[in-house]
Length: 320
Image (cartoon, rainbow, N blue to C red; front, side):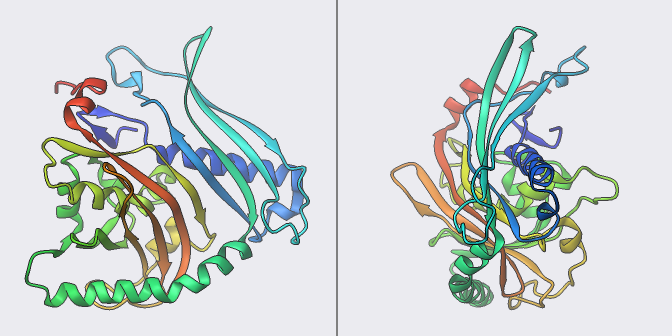
């Protein structure tokens, strides 16, 4: 929480909610389905994430040492666990809340966990893999010859310095090593290189936020008047990550692929093209690739453009 700052205020990132839902989902599946929860056949899809209220931890205030917040989960695994059940093997509904006092609980976010066969995901993604890799290759190739300024390349430090126009991320959140953006097409790709370590850090929020940062970065980087407006995310449609995509796997990857083609089989990269959906909304799917293979997708990520004066009203800047 201390590494996700807007208007000098530490906020709970939505990646924490997603990590909690996924962790509890895996635990419930293992407890109720036994050995079936051990393998890689069942995928945990954290979907329909909606953040209705901003959670500002009081722990950053003087004299406050702790605060209670919780997730309540209701599981329904009555669906058949047969592979023939191709849509869902069960669901969990999750509600996130904080307790302001022992008698008053305030809900601020919610989501649904779907248990689905991993084969369903990979078969759905397979037809798109070639198109996505071609788009990335074209974008990288154009970035080396374009002189109009509509395509630019940013290294990690400068990319997150630009992000500060809206959100200030701690070093361990800064996991896009290199970003290439086409401003006209609202299209971008980034090489992932995690700054956190599973041996010393609780990586959940760093891991999840880093794998989806590109969407919010494109929205706010492409905003013509960032001094007056900002793009805010209220959730996502689906979060599907294969077991082969992890902090450990990304940190083991080779150094190839930066600034050139897709790179070696071990390079992890994200890609997104945001599309205007109405006057003030940008939306898209964030694809995560290992080499030429899709290993994860954030579906239906949407950002709404709001005036900063409105943001400052609901989230007044904290004096430092």
